[in-house]
Length: 155
Ligand code: HEC
Image 1 (cartoon, helix red, strand yellow):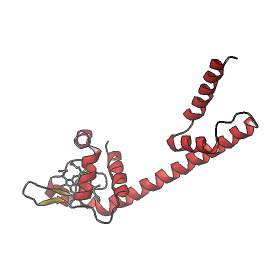
Image 2 (cartoon, helix red, strand yellow; image 1 turned 120 degrees about the vertical axis):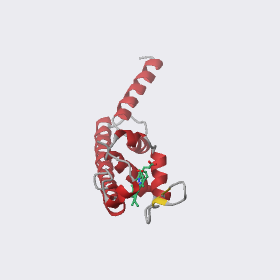
Image 3 (cartoon, helix red, strand yellow; image 1 turned 30 degrees about the horizontal axis):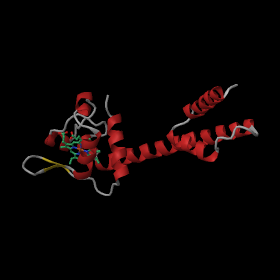
Image 4 (cartoon, helix red, strand yellow; image 1 turned 90 degrees about the vertical axis):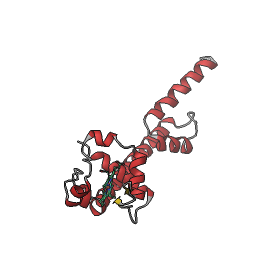
């Protein structure tokens, strides 16, 4: 095998282990297992696999925990206007003429940034009257999770 071929092979091996992990896992795998394929290769690979699997499970658990929080926050702070289903068929919703968040067109009508800002700062009409009040006691991460949650209401 000439030098060029060795390099090519190394690149392929690298790409294979990269493809099997998400961004975080990729960095971790590189950090913990410097490119050293000389000794005990099998054991290293096994360890790598275990690490990556653990990581995948942990991030899945973290993600669903965040989604649970967002649902709870939505129920606490948003349902009275937007309704549990997001259709806005509530007393407040009708009074305010809220748009139907299950409608794909409505969802397309605002970007994640606009949704974030609406939740964080609230919405005022052109006369400066509050239509939607700013969220209280929610961190930026909570609000981001709420935007993600609102996207799931789309039918
Ligand atoms: C007091 C009633 C009220 C409450 C409470 C409320 N909203 Fe709203 N929301 C509105 C109104 C009114 C609008 C204006 C747009 C419309 O007509 O639907 C709106 C718009 C939005 C939009 C679309 C933004 C845009 O620019 O079109 C999102 C996303 C949203 N609300 C999410 C939430 C979330 C998440 C919560 C809970 C943290 C919440 N709202 C709580 C009344 C409310």
